[in-house]
Image 1 (cartoon, one colour):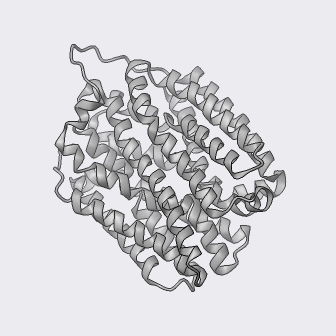
Image 2 (cartoon, one colour):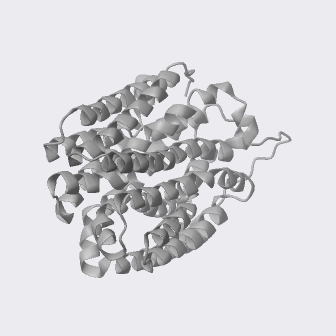
Length: 392
């Protein structure tokens, strides 16, 4: 299983890459196929929405079929096929369809790992293992920054996507060959995702799960690039540096969150405190004038660091799942987290387009995005404060 987890981690590197690389390719895509920022926001949103929509069938497949076939088949067809289609794109709609397919391909990768952790390791170690996988896999976030800008300069964005199609296909084959499925739970108990949705305790966690990752993923995956370009005339190198800083902060935050539930003896207040700090960083972006790139970059990094609480939120939800519904439980929580990113990408694309149409300085087109992100995180926190703590 050790080799299988390594290959799954490589697959998750690809998943993190695909959700973040559009920010770096915004300029060449605008030049070559006329893709505007709101087009890319829509395409990015489709990635997350497709990823989220797949979580229910992926959860069923993990419990019934196992992680090996589920992750391998979808990554080859969706990841490899979608990247190949992207390489051939001649209009923004082709990018949207390609991103949808890639979202389907990436949808089972992290949850396959979490399913294995939940089934084969003690519950008290789940948050640490989940954070470790998320943190190591988030190297893809870094590769999607400056290295992608260099690759696009050297190979062109089409050549870069063609290479990614080949890598995705090879990784899917590697999952098929190396991952071993845990033994299936033998039980007379029956159930479905509807049983999980009937649990009141989870409904106090779902809203924060829906909103907390959206600012970090949305800013890192798209908005940092156009923001730096429109407000400060930043070139690809500077955009790559800003996104690299935010990506590194997201990785550091993931590792920092991992053991904190055991250090402090609480999941709830670790999650609440971290996301409160993320809210303050978003509020600062909304209130401060957009006149200093590196101050904005530091605040982007703070959003990335403090918004990396997903593994602990997943562990909080995991503590309520019955064993025979673990696959559907982890994917249901992931549906809310990734679905929130997709929905917020579509919403912020519309907000940006409306603000730009109203005229004014470039900063006026972006401030409403930060207001929306900060407001939704605050809403999630208000609901989450009533959630129930659980022992490890």
